[in-house]
Each structure stands twice: as C-alpha cells, then as structure tokens.
Length: 164
Image 1 (cartoon, helix red, strand yellow):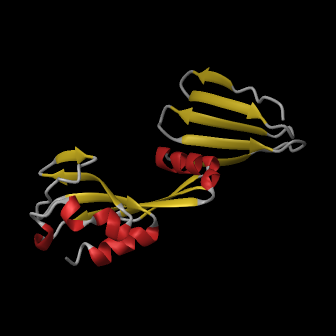
Image 2: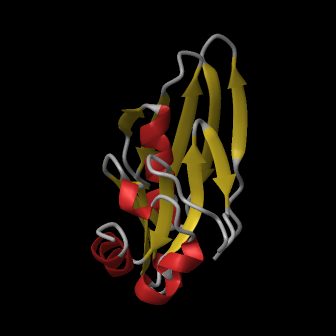
C-alpha cells in the first residue's frame, strides 16, 4: 500500500478543496464550500465524468463515522455506536428522566452496574451537568441521566431500575 498524498487548495470565493488518489488510481475530492455545504466528488480511474454528492455538515460527519467504522444510529433519546475495529462492538447511550420513586436513592443504592451492567456517565439537573457521578450520587426526580452500555444492558436498566 502506498502513502496517499492529501492535497489541499484554497479556492477564493468557493471554499477549500481536499483531494487524494487511491492506490487504484481513483480520485476523491472533498469541497468545503463558503456556503457551509460539503461536496464530495469521486472520479474512477479511466472515467471522464465524476460522481458527486452534496452533504450538510451533519451528513458529512455521518459519512466520516461510517468510513472510520464508528457507525452511529440515533433516535430521540438513544444513540447506538458500532465500532467495527473492535469486533463489531455496539454501545448504546440512552437518556432517562428519573421518576419520583428513584429520587433520594444513590447509584450505589440502586446497584445499577451490578443489576444491569450499564453505567451512569452523566446527570443533568437544573441545567447543570454532573459528569461521571460517583456511586454516592443521590438522584432527584426529574434528573436526566445519561446511561451507557450494550443494548441489552440498557433494556435491563429500563426494566430493573426505572420501575423501582
């Protein structure tokens, strides 16, 4: 495998172009336009006309995640990330709103990791973020808890902890 040289060129009034050639002779060019869109062009070796796609910054990041193996699937309260480089590891991050029955209990009281295998990585309370709360952290009703684990562990958290 040869080392691909990445070329960049500032195009006044247009934006910035990044381009490289693959080992097979295909050309890939990415334009970051002044208008905020990202355009990707590919020109297959031996072809005269390139293929093009225009993306928003969010779509471009999604493509980058796919190309690096960090695939992200999101819904309103859950994000699932797949890391193909780590034996297809899939991690889910889910936000839960703490109900009244859990208020006043600590992470340790609830035995979250022992019962579910999941971990509370952050809590938002009154627009204040508490990152990596300790086992002695006391939940209040209405807290937004960010929980990480495999999909089955998140489902177990919902079944075992959220119904307490």
